[in-house]
Amino acid sequence: MRKGWIFGIAVLVWCSLIYSVTASPAATSKNTSSIIRSEINVSPVTVRKINILVRKAAHVTLFGVLAVLVQLALWKRPQAALISWLFATLCGAADEIHQVFVPNRTPSLIDMGIDSLGACAALLLFHLVFKLGTSIIRKSDADF
Image (cartoon, rainbow, N blue to C red):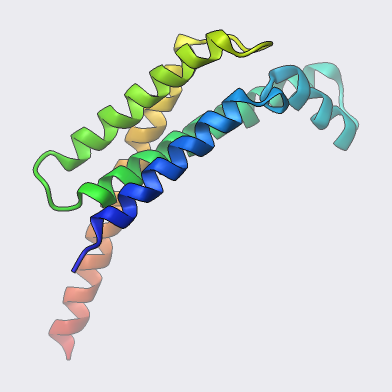
């Protein structure tokens, strides 16, 4: 039996993690740039490019994981994937609005779009892997 409520709790914990990360002064672009600069010896232009890549990858990852957790919580319900994507997208929008009130943070429509695309990509990958895994299991059961 699926325990959707466990994944529901995981969704709440993950949303809290996203909120705490984006509320932290350590998550500012300036701070991540200084960390990159201290770890590797590259030009300021390269630091800026790496910083952008790391920060955008974080958006994709955070909201992709969120969408998959919601999908798991809703598992066999109709429209679960769509609801999961919408939920992650709305959380991304709420996160950008939240950043208006965080010192040294600025909201970005681009980041909101990246959050939404990350959620969509993660859900597509999740469903692809699930269908592939199911097909492999069925094939191995048939060979038995």
